Image (cartoon, rainbow, N blue to C red; front, side, top):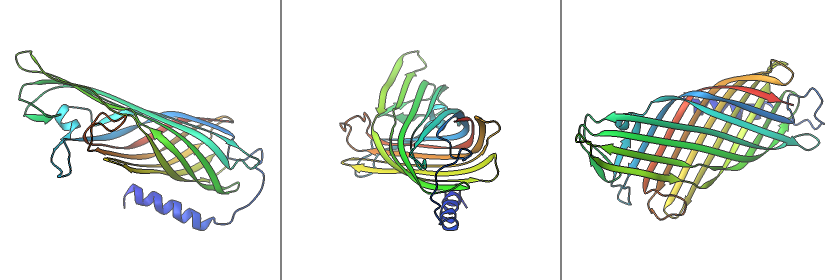
Length: 282
């Protein structure tokens, strides 16, 4: 059974087991803190696929960037999150999230490849770079909450600047191709579900699912993010977290003139790994 199915089962089972809502003001010793901030990252396996020249007939070339351009298949990605609760019962909150990844590589081709409508032959030296930054802003509400658990939903949007660049030099030290500034910048709406359970006075189990799907004109995109973490509140205002994360992002654009998206084809990121972070709360 995959991580996605396990997480969905945990959330649905939690909602059934704890369907009784207890209305009361949050106490001073409540596990649900007014301000929370975490920073860390995760060690991850990465798969990046770009399909260039996709059209209604599906004609194009799929390129596995890790294999074709020598990009690392594993990396450490910085990640930060925060939220602020408000209201008498502190069921409502606003929050933000960020993670960023930059990868560079150099590779001498051992076989011919086609990339962005150009063919690069054996012996060509390829210098490439990929950058991915994801910014998230959201509002959340815990529709079930007491001193032992909370279950709720979020709504917000992602902004994702993504860029690809490539420089190629042949065996005669002649520049034979450059690609720079291929990018996507678009606000994308998302919804999410989350649950948190107090296992002891210092240990919390948290799960969350973030989803979005958009189709507008010739552009469509989707994202699925799954998180499951175990938090240990070691000190009064400081804790630590360990968990797993899965992130799957896909874009397709059939019209290169689509606003804010300088790209025609398909683009996909698949990340999964172990999440480690430090957390402050007040």
